[in-house]
Image (cartoon, rainbow over all chains, first blue to last red; front, side, top):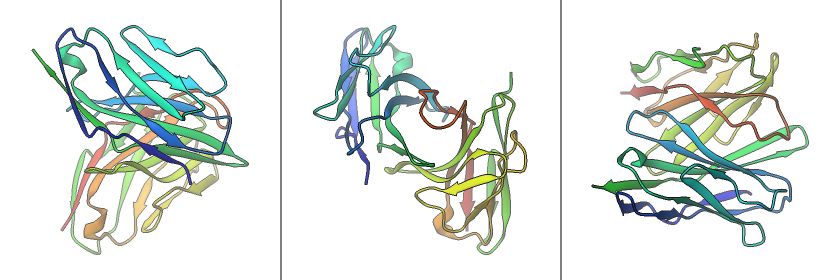
Length: 116
Length: 115
């Protein structure tokens, strides 16, 4: 069974500093997709970044980047120049399509606090 | 641009009552899904649909029914509410099905309390 593990229940970072959130997953598939979602106190789920497993190049979206290590099944999120608005729960998610069915699994989340 | 609309935002039920959580999207997305979010558990998939007339079970389907009669709507029915169904429920949709990198678009969630 596919699982997604976020080993850091909580993290904190100083404003303007860099923080890395970890995510590992367990799968026997070679073709899948990975996502990071952000959930601020408003409860809205917001896409941060996505990565296709067949792409070797790490995805980047402005201050957000990932370190995708396929062999190690690791998908960490780096936030550079942290801002107060980055404070939120962050969820890593894994998606694979097998035959006619789809599996989408979320990690349990990491709560990020940004200190001024 | 409404996106994914969930109603109601809050609901309190008594054990044994039934109700339907509504979800509608205006993006012509093929894929729609329901998740529940519990503290410390992340999001867990209840049911999903890859198109009108097609539904499938997710990780935690027991106690819930769904149907997909139109592309736009994907209601979630609680047949006989139980305290264990107290949770925040999210509806989400995405473009296409199968192998593509399109992300989920989420509604704002429904907080359900069963007493």
